[in-house]
Amino acid sequence: MNILMIYPRYPVTFWSFKHVMKYIAKKAAFPPLGLLTVAAMLPAEWNIRLTDLNIEKLREKDMLWADYVMISAMLIQKDSVDEILRECVRLKKKVIAGGPLFSAKPEDYYDSVDHLILNEAECTLPPFLSDLARGAAQKVYRSGEFPSLHSTPLPRWDLARIKCYANLMIQFSRGCPFNCEFCDVTSLFGHNPRIKTEDQFLRELQSIYDTGWRGTVFIVDDNFIGNKKAIKTMLPGVVAWMKKHQYPFELLTETSINIADDDELIRLMTQAGFNSIFIGLETPNEESLKECSKNQNCKRDMIAAIKKLQAGGLQVFGGYIVGFDNDDENIFARQIKFIQETGVVTAMVGLLNALPNTKLWHRLKDENRLDDNSSGNNTDGSINFIPRMDKTKLIAGYQKIVKTIYSPRYYYQRINEFLKSYKPIPIKRKNRYSVRRMRAFVKSVFYIGILGNGATQWYYWKLMLKSLIFYRESFSEAMTLMIYGYHFRKMAKKL
Image 1 (cartoon, rainbow, N blue to C red):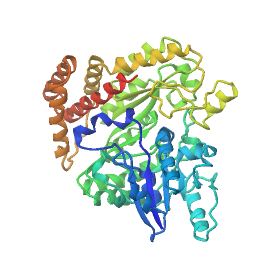
Image 2: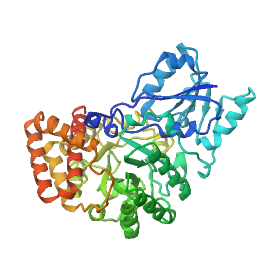
Image 3: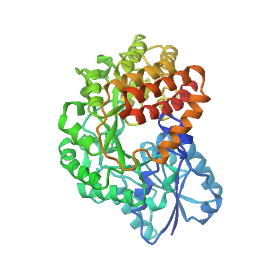
Image 4: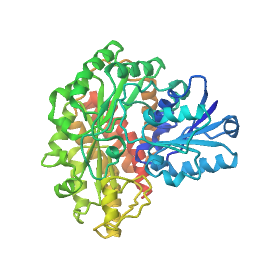
């Protein structure tokens, strides 16, 4: 059996970092971890090829070679999925599809996909493979179970052109104990965080190490600390592995803000090589936090929590939302002030959108306020429901936030605020200043320091000098953030 796995193209988004790939000679930020994991679940005798449309074009000869095309996608990749399916129709190729896009609205693809493998592959892929082997494969395979991850195999990194990516990825857990109204994680993966074993996690680290990769590894869990007890039990093993291998990776993940309540957890994570975490901060408006059931953020000094994490050696990437029912026209200025005071440099501000099957989606549908046509990208300036605030004012206010915080002056001020709080943990990393870092730095001098506009140039050289004098241990982080700013300014101009 010949299988062509196709990963659809992402549009240029906040997290694509497309505009900074040239600085590090990469083509895309992340590889398709889901497809690589599914590939390891397929029969060993099958021939598998992977085409990632984010780094290469789809070749007709690969399509003609394949007996089946396999696609996995998220909502934001829908336009690319539609293009792929049209090509499959033209070449009369059978399609197997799965992932969040197809699991959320399978009825949209009954006519264009031959077999829909929905929900989690550990449950639904085996019966499909069994039926396919005896010539009785059904149209749809679905399951309401949340499977153990103990049998999840190592991803097939041999299928990926890993040198084309800025980061590689690992998953340790699925699920989140919280109940945020707008989030689709619990509808997809449940409230009980299911985890891999420590041995599984270390084997995955080793498998990435064995590819020759040295750099950032993103642990893609939606809430890495959802099961704190398990994480704190596992992390000492990661610390030992990283020390033995001279810290070949810098780890990045997503957590909830209650990580700031646990000094031991912060210490273990930084010792294990974590230097950045993404947290959904959402809003300084307490009423809006209550509205969306973001209870872990309520009655908390979030600025103090962020400063504590920065001082502990963790750079915080923040997610922010405007458009809640309890937001008024003051929210835009409040968000800007909140973001600037925290020194969260990488601040993803989005308009509230209702993803399929979330609590928010069902509530708005019941209130006849839902336009069920989300782009899946909450940073493109679109909204798929009728907001309480005037829609025109909401979108204009959102645009003002983004354009303000990514203007050269505000962006520089935020980096400076971050550097004042940030205390990187001294770790003897192998190749800390690698050829890739030096190449990025040299290109930043050319593209930002020389070719940038007046304000951008001024803040670039000012930050470089200040970092060399006062924040030498954070110099690499400061220059990286200036490069990120190039991408964020490009994105802000599109709004």
